[in-house]
Structure formats: structure tokens, C-alpha cells
Image: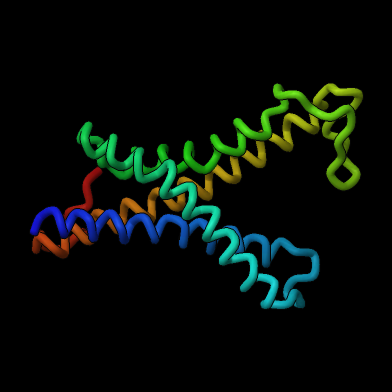
Length: 169
């Protein structure tokens, strides 16, 4: 019975993490769009499932193995999930889009030049760091949401009383 409860807790947390990240991402994209509030909600309803699928892939391929390792090491605190979520959100982007890899000779975003003559500009480094940081914050929010789901379901299944009162530090 204990194994079934643990599997339910992990499965619920595995679904909550990408739902939190996708909701924050789609919501931020919706309100930061220059056309807001006149933006078509249909655009957001397309964006959320795409963001959820990407975040779910991160959760399954990176979050689940991290959870299993940390659970084995008995490191299941909220701040570990927060830091782990940040790393899981930021590192895939940071590695794949690293300016230290072979880059094009020129790259622009809007009016900003990110790469000029094969050299990453200061604006390019700032853009890279800000994007990795933003994705890390989405991952941290997802990681915290997963931990809260996992923790509170454990309190409910074990009859441990008020989860809010007993929230560990």
C-alpha cells in the first residue's frame, strides 16, 4: 500500500510541475504581449499545451530521475525542489544555446545584435543569461509546485494532521 501511495504522490507531482510552469509561461506571454488585453485568447490556449508538453518532457526526463536520486539520498526538502527545478528549467537551454558553442557570424533579436562577426556581444550575453534565468524561474516554480503536491498528498494519505501547521522549514 505504501508503494502505491508513493507512486500516486510522484505521479501527481510529475503532472503539477509542468502545469505550473506552462500556466506561468502562457500567462506571462499573454500579459506581456503589446496587444494585451486585446490579444486573442485562442493564442494562449494554443501556447499552454505546447508549453505543457515541453515542461512535461523536462519533468519526465530530468525531474523524475532527480527526484528518485534525491529521494534515495533523503533530500526531499522544499528548497532542494526549488533549486533542482531551477536547474532543470535553465540547464537544457543554457547548454544547448551556449554562446561558447559554434555560433553564426551574425544574429539579431529585434533591433539588438547578439552576435557580430562570430563574437557574442554584451547584449547577447545578457539576453542569454536572462533567458536561462527566466526558464530557471519557471522550473523553480514547477519544482516547488511538485514538492507541495508531493508533501501535502503525503500528509493526507498518512493522516498527519494539518499540513499548513506542520510545514517543515
